[in-house]
Length: 104
Length: 166
Image (tube, rainbow over all chains, first blue to last red; front, side):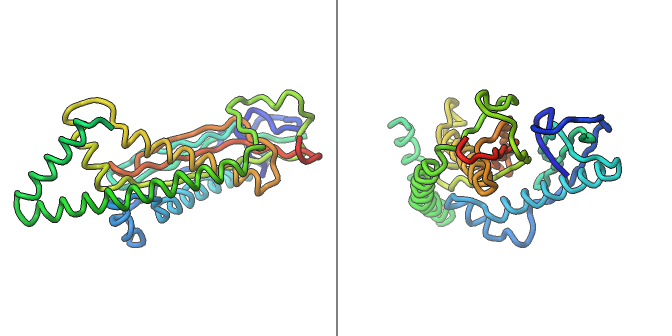
């Protein structure tokens, strides 16, 4: 599955559009594995556990979107957009959406 | 950072110190945050400088258009990169003081800028790892993880051409 965040797939021609596909996931941030984060908030620096958590969340949301696109027999998803919103204290929603297309 | 703010900060710390053992502990943590936070910030800025120089040839653009002079790319791919950076106890303390007085909270400005630079740097690294020569339609999102930590997330379409170095 080819993903791009522009309207086309460079070098390929879009045969037809199959419609909007999306994926989302809500993750809580305060897990046991980020015990160190509290300390890091004191001394500064990267919160690696959080970086990884958000990355995994985005991967999961993206793979859900790709799954939807596969069901439509798409070759690519174009114009992909990500958005992040806070659902509750300590939880974030990752939402990703795009247009599934068939390529020539 | 203005001198008056430093004076106000020192005064507030002094008040904390004479307010009892709890305040003294808090003051100690803030001072610890000052030293370690500053070290972390300096180290990060140095690593940003050296690593950004490494990817100078890689062009980022937030336009959707393909680079003008270029032929059709051989491969295109969505890539993304992110980082979560925390402030330190001292900067949080200063930010609290500034938000009482109002005005520019430069300690948080610097934090956010570092987060965005790091996210863009990682995006460049991800593009370079895939053999791409440019990344187009770059989008940057900033998301607050907590009051004192911020996530910067960057994504875009990486393009690779047949002939390297286009």
